Image (cartoon, rainbow, N blue to C red; front, side, top):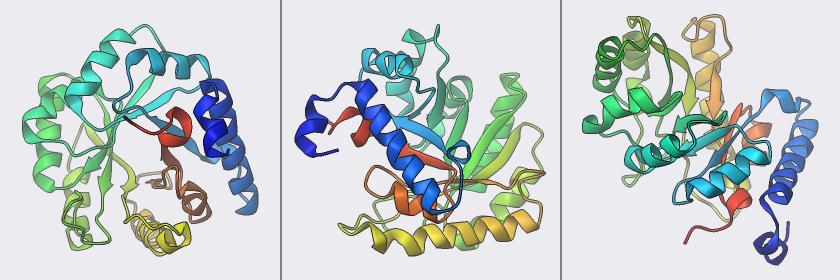
Length: 238
């Protein structure tokens, strides 16, 4: 959708436009739309906007910060929203995250896995789906574990009774040319495939949370099952 048209489009129109992009991408990749979960990234956007998105048919929402999400989740408790934490999880926010979020994408240490497991037991949360965030570019400004830490984190998850490993996540560098991101998405898929063969994700294939507004078509081509889209749905953040 052209930038000017996007600025005046309704949320319904933007959702439809993103769905069309997803459909075109999965067709090119010989996949189906049912394989892709669209996560609407609502950070900095108020609860009223999220409610509009719910009315437009979206159900999954991504937030970066526990504190910001808490107020929105409380205001939208009557809806069918599923909440994903996609930003870095600070140690002092773990208990609140256990209470608030349906899925956490940003697990980056064995210590965090163990803390989540303990707090799930304390809060009587039966199952908490998580994804391990892998830093494939070594960017100092971004969270995520090194690939070398992946075996230990997976072993820690396998010891858990409440924390359930469901996939991997990455946040690659930004390039004007989205094709330059492809190697990072491909590498995450290769890691997922390797650990799926080892049974890390149980009976499931293992989700791949990768791709945003700028590059999710490339991510889908490389196997993404979750795409995290904000700007294309809600416009640029203020």
